[in-house]
Length: 265
Ligand SMILES: [Fe+2]
Image (cartoon, rainbow, N blue to C red):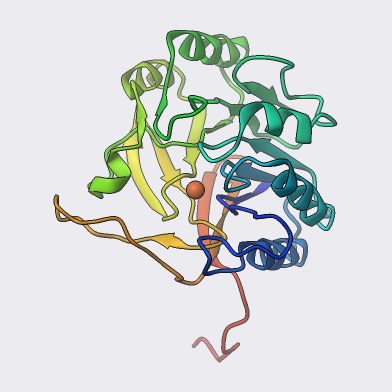
């Protein structure tokens, strides 16, 4: 099973630049063209939050317009820049989304890997949390079929990255998540967005990785007094490839056209 993960496109209303600097809409459109052209094609595309920047109706209208070009099935979760209710309204045709409360869901039927989406966002706040109810929900999902390979998707990552301005807004109470995940070895991967960078770490006995954004990258700075910055680095996405007997391999892929191909050996 092949799963593409696009994250943090920060779509703006038509004709408006993200941060007044970059055309996040055009960059998301380019990401969609890139994913559509993959061969083999992914079975599923995951969109791991911050689908828009301010949570306005005009942004969600633009988002759906851009997503109309995506020729593959896709699943969505909100990020801290989304507005939970506007998001729910914008994806009212996505029947897997619950009608109220956090947008937790389990999705099966796209391939061998089960997707468990855990909504750790807190409306109006930039950091997230794993609530006792969220952890309980996830425990029940995982216990329902303990042998099914599973990918958990959430927006804010539950670990300290070492980048101070990212760690101010991480997903708190990650211990609750680690406790659940450590009981379920079928969890192949936890995937997050939010940090606009690729990172990987061990978490709760599984592997956790974060996705780059399809627009700007948040600066990698590890000094404790570093000030927030972002850069227009090459945009990128992740491709999670699961095979029986092998497990999940995650590929980092820049989006765009690059020089080559050249002879390899
Ligand atoms: Fe973001």
